[in-house]
Length: 204
Image (cartoon, rainbow, N blue to C red):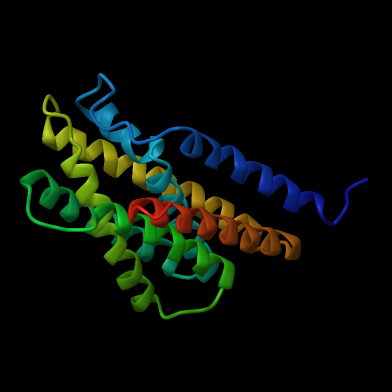
């Protein structure tokens, strides 16, 4: 017999499956023997901080609904590409890891709060974080990489994670228990982000 909590459990299970690879693996950086599209594609997927932030952007946009479902992730991708260019060119930017860690904390907190915010504000919110994520992708580009194909790779990986977050968030909105589980997951993501931030600042 189907219980009212079964859908929520299913979506939580799906979320855990999505988060597991990112939590288990660190940044692949230049360690993988892929210097082109595949290396770029795997970079946001294998970095736990990137992974959680990208999925969270998708979930947050689904919670907001309407045009935010595509404008918020699209803003992140566009600004991230500019940040990637800045990182590749070696332009100065400080506190990269702290900025990325804070993005995980803030996005998780936003999911947990589930507050309606103006779409433009959300775009500025995620766009700011995208600078740090993009810069890290560009700065960590392997020397053997072809810049354009590598960039297309991490853009595609990011878009794919956004889409996964949108699917999770959108399905969860159809169930009361799904919304509760999603907010709880947001709290967990925020806690992980807090740990990342402490580690980035040398406290943890």
